[in-house]
Length: 93
Image (cartoon, rainbow, N blue to C red; front, side, top):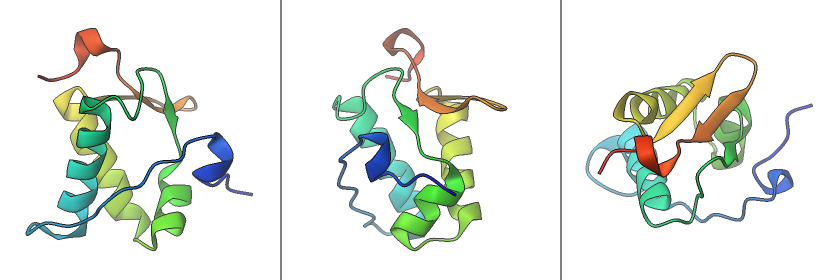
């Protein structure tokens, strides 16, 4: 059974707005949450499947947003360990 965003102890409101579509909106919202400290370093994010279900998005949309943020240094991902917020020392400015 997939664990939902709320069961992970994360109460985060994401605004998926903007002119770039849902993927861009999710990427921007997560980046902003990390930048402003609403998502602390080391916080484990829900699986792409779980977050997609919670937000009513396609799983691939969430997976691509996570991949974009990993490439930018905001998140880290390791097979079997999930996706986490990167330590401040490695996150993008």
